[in-house]
Image (cartoon, rainbow, N blue to C red; front, top):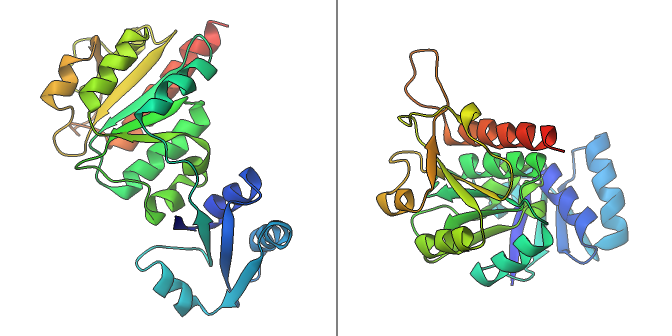
Length: 247
């Protein structure tokens, strides 16, 4: 199984992470700059087939996506699923940090969340399989390599996965604008899953039932809520701040 990956960061991450990850590579013939030359240097050692093509050909390969002059045909590796959650948590040590995204549909939001998750050292990101965006070329491009470094697992039954995390000792903290406790007052150290809802409806009722507590990001202006990827960034790095202070 193969899939298309585009964007300089995402394709470079593929080439750096797995020598056999890229089956073929298409690059824009007229683009000449340092970042693309670095990518081509990696590709010459690791990719058997490199095509130099016009921009129109790249546009046809990934319609509607800003590809930055490079598209890779990536070999599909092991497809992660719910059975992988346990081993990933075990490998993370005593204080795994998990990000739960309950129904994000905008690929730019998911990509931004994955990029932030990488920066925060997140153990894994979990999302439902239905009514949510997956790892599309647009998501990978926005993630700037985060989709290649952070395990992203889509599950058929999010409630069951939340129960599994709770059984393994993770505290499930839901982010809600109307929560009484500000995020900074919550103890985000130790095994933790931060749970964020989708763009329109927020946390679903069944998801809320599995959260052990709720927290809000205090807003000082006139807007009623933050973009989900912005909220994820604030929450994750508040957790990082508390954890770094605990070491």
